[in-house]
Length: 219
Image 1: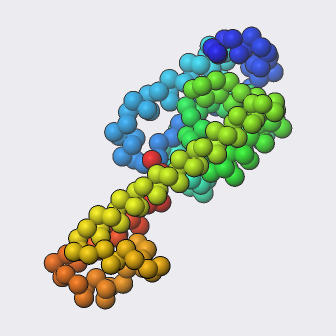
Image 2: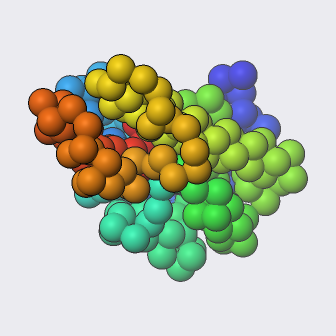
Image 3: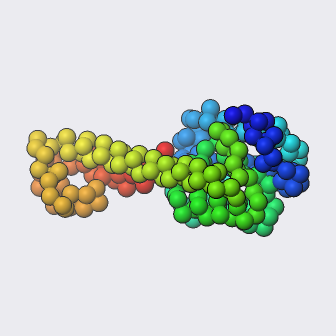
């Protein structure tokens, strides 16, 4: 269903158009910001959807100060915190993000935003369509999207962690280091490493350090 068709059903009202449209833009890492330029362009292009719905260009605000920040939490995302505050103050007519995962990969943060949007009469728009969190069916669909976004992050972490551990274990002739409950990327002892093949010690230390840096990042 097109945005125009959805708008004809009355979701966008004059009251919404009097308020500001907020476009939230985020990439999870600085590497993605520099390399995934197509995704960034698609996110900025979503601004045109607000224009089509009736918002004047001067009433569309872009929040892109969270570039390079993970969506798993809001602790270091000043842009998201500002967005939630503006919605809570009733200044937002619509919140836009290319995908749910751009706004939050944490169900608690996502559902908190949905609740505030529902109370303040703020619409939500993504690449797929336009939603009113005050309507049950729309809120149900948005809730499912948030759950899928968090689950996707869990799967990505598990794959990354499993791949790095598999590569680390491949430096040894046996799989003995895979066995037992004590094997975690953070509990490989220095004695266990150095008592085995010394020439492979540096490689394993480097790989376990890599886990610390990357395993908790989303994609």
